[in-house]
Length: 476
Ligand code: NAD
Image 1 (cartoon, protein in one colour):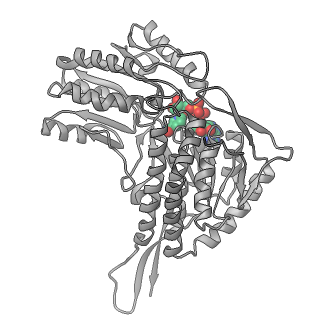
Image 2 (image 1 turned 90 degrees about the vertical axis):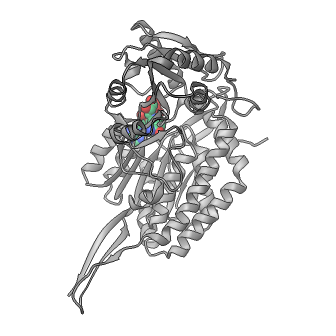
Image 3 (image 1 turned 60 degrees about the vertical axis):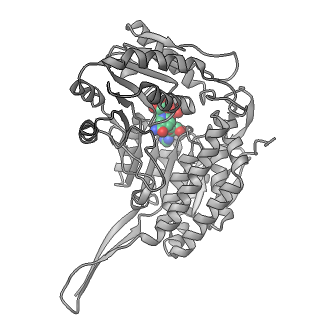
């Protein structure tokens, strides 16, 4: 049995706890049990973190690629050695199944390994100039980064937010979600144990709005990296704009899935049902609006509902569980509100639509069909275990529906018609597109959105580029 660890912040390498700091109670979403008490930063803590980050930046910007690579690949090795413990802790505090948590650890290790190679590829270039003169373009780390990440991927989100600045030569102050603190502490500890100097990366917790206002008001911070809702993202982007800080914004989505008449419905359901209810639907790239062509619509809807009802829901630590609880009490409340108002507006409930049990934050895998376009759930990211399935006649109508919302993070399409695949690739407004596939990410692939889903990327060479500034030097 893995014990849930005691909680602290990590400021300048020191475990910070106690004193007269406020605390927040951390709860297991499967059982409602208290896991621990998390200390929250006061302004003295944040001042210390800022001073440390400034010092860490001056040190780390001068580090060699070999040093950065050694830290990143060493941390990747430690993550895999600690995989089972980290996965159990993530499931205890976030709720997802143990299998999903194990994959998350592997994802972070894979990303750190990719970045360990990427540090050697931050090439500049020499321009063609007359003999005796020289003009070069080089990339330099942007400066100390303030990173804010949510609770849905408690290991993966902080992994991305720590890995890229470290690869680029920046320092970083990480404020991950207060609801899942032990996971980020576990990832950061792997980096520190792999030799990362203690002033380069730190973890603080606090009242989110207080911490972000304080850090973003400081001239020390040169870049904001945020993952979370569009509404909070817009607010933080405005704070960053006051000081013209660079931003990477990974915001909400409302993933359209176009399913055409020519597909093998069972095969599509085999893939999409699992992808829909992964992490209880609390995923920014979750497939949400199923835009289904009329000939396969009824078979698709009924098959989806049947498979949703058959899913085994329970404590993610137990064997055979396919979907855990939602991560916090706000999510089942939101499901109840969004599904209730859709049914009131005329949608049909084909599966779920109710809470499960009387402890924790469980909500049944749900399916709604014939959902009016003006229902709130067709316009607001549901961020939960609900599929919205509507029928369409033509490709024009399907593409128009995919592009109807201001979001553009992930989209999916199922068709065997190559010309249609290319049309979808060209016309659907999205940052990531899966054609007959849901594998839309990877350590080497840029992850990010367009429109209200944000800007900038994580992962891939783009993730490190986002932490660099360009300098042109001309020697006469
Ligand atoms: P929320 O929008 O209040 O919080 C989302 C995350 O942002 C949390 O980690 C929170 O700590 C952080 N946050 C909130 N206000 C902040 C601030 N002023 N400064 C810095 N960080 C701040 O809501 P929530 O109830 O936690 O989640 C609800 C919605 O958030 C979901 O419906 C979903 O749309 C969105 N969300 C998106 C992602 C994603 O991966 N894009 C992840 C989690 C939540």
